[in-house]
Image 1 (tube, rainbow, N blue to C red):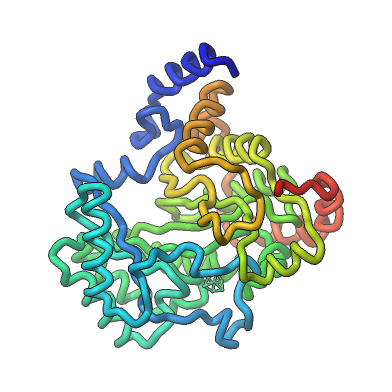
Image 2: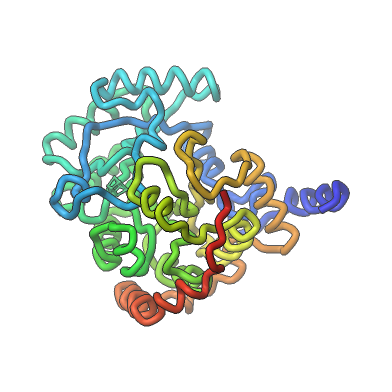
Length: 366
Ligand code: SF4
């Protein structure tokens, strides 16, 4: 693209607005989390990552051992979030860091690493209360797995949501059970669906789902088709990641032994743009790509900063006149999500072998 046409594209993207996308502003052609938070709280609010000392049932043998094949919690935990430091001390360090960097004064306490509802109810109450007692903390974000949400925990979160802002994040990762098996997630899509439905009984809880694009058993058609299931979940937010191979993971071992195809940058821009265009307009995007520290990242290495990726995505969507919800149709949603998930799993069971061979052979990006 020439400098001239880039300027043209940016001009078009800057003026983009859509009545169903209140948080698509300043060049973003999808609902952006930053603007949602600003509107909801009336000022910039930052999340402070906290380490609550939790484990994960997929690591301690309750559901599985070794964890998900891509998981290395170290790769996304900031230095101040450390197990042996109290929640209050972590909050102080995190707030100091974010105040200096962004000038923020209000914060969300973000229990991010491992499964942050995987403990006795009394322990959860203690940790969440400690964080919410901080006068600068406006609410909680709690990241967890669908199989770590028994009724009493869901009721605790629902009760807290009556007095505080509460956001619960669940890893969906894929709607296809074959992919979940490939990742060693040790849970099914039906369990994820059930957890979202039970949490949705408390409408004051904002719900986030995570998905990973570019899994080796999924074709582009399968990824775009998964939107029928995702759009029907009671999601307020979605985090979209691309598959990355990270140091000290099972995936890194497998990849080094037998490299497999990962998405290159142009391919990802194209896929994620079309994926966003099929997404329900009411959903707000918290992430649109993965961002792991250089020292952990094995592949794909795109050599792009976060800002460059966001700007490229804005330009790409503007040039093609794409925006969130452009291809969304409420009729595409399945009324019974579990049925859609089962259908998706059936597609996987029937088509996984074909899907693998349909991906570009042996394409590596590092
Ligand atoms: S990604 Fe989450 S569920 Fe999977 S092993 Fe890591 S902490 Fe556990």
